[in-house]
Length: 373
Image 1 (cartoon, one colour):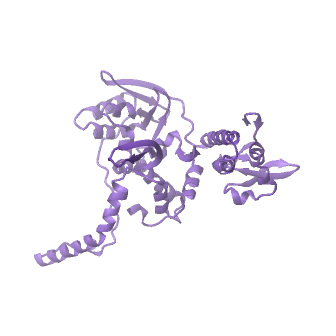
Image 2 (cartoon, helix red, strand yellow; image 1 turned 120 degrees about the vertical axis):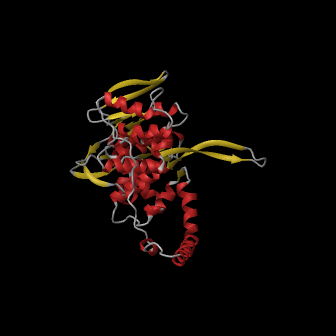
Image 3 (tube, one colour; image 1 turned 90 degrees about the vertical axis):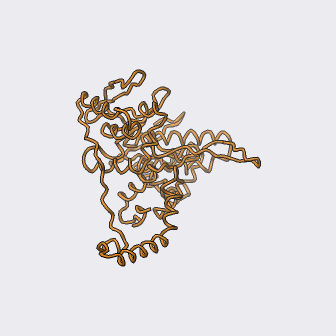
């Protein structure tokens, strides 16, 4: 594959993963010693020898996720090399995005219906499902789709509907599009009715959507409460029968008060650092999983969810609802706050998605209590 005046050898493996010839990259950034005298396996976690051959010998290759580790040492050497490193890192990120299973959107046709004047809604009809432009819906009420998507009840609803066969796979239930005038979050049709009831409960918006989807040949499920299965508790009194007299009732109340007092710090921690937070650092999520932030980012990159770009980890377009921009602020001695720049953080939905994905991929290493936090 071409990169400026160079040609870089690239292989796609049997499982769809992309491998890049390390020797070709080292020539470009003038670090030939990495493959001549160094040990790539120690420096790059993804390094393995592949059928890139020279004089009959297999050569080293790396996955695009390790590109930033390769170019980082040369950034400080000169402005020219810094610009070259940035360009090469961007080239590797495009390969990483091409590897992601979310990279392609199949053929579809679009239908636009109007709920009211100046209130169009666009439906994308695919071969097996319908997606709806959620941004068009929420913007009329001064909101954005991520506000609804990051609510824990929404996440539960999506997973329950996936288990019941009412929706597709969790990570395929929504996608985003970019571009001036084309940026939007698209959600799978059955979710639209629930979102409409949340955003405009006092209108007939949800029923209107149901009828539109019906005319498009899609039957939406009747809205009904999603009942969560009770998680067995660890407190013995939960299994005790109800008190039969006042004395037993008073004893149970006293026991409950003691348990509440004992667990109050945990409840406060959960509310302040989990339930009531709008965003999370990778460090906190990594702590929940018992791994380092580096291993967490490596895992997410290998899953095709994020890439290292401009010195931070950024999700691909299909996963934009999992991240948000948090501004940096500074307050002077007069109490006036100033904003300068921003950084990427994980949303509530992003945290829960990562925990669930890690649990599926590493069932034997998953902490038993992170789902209760």
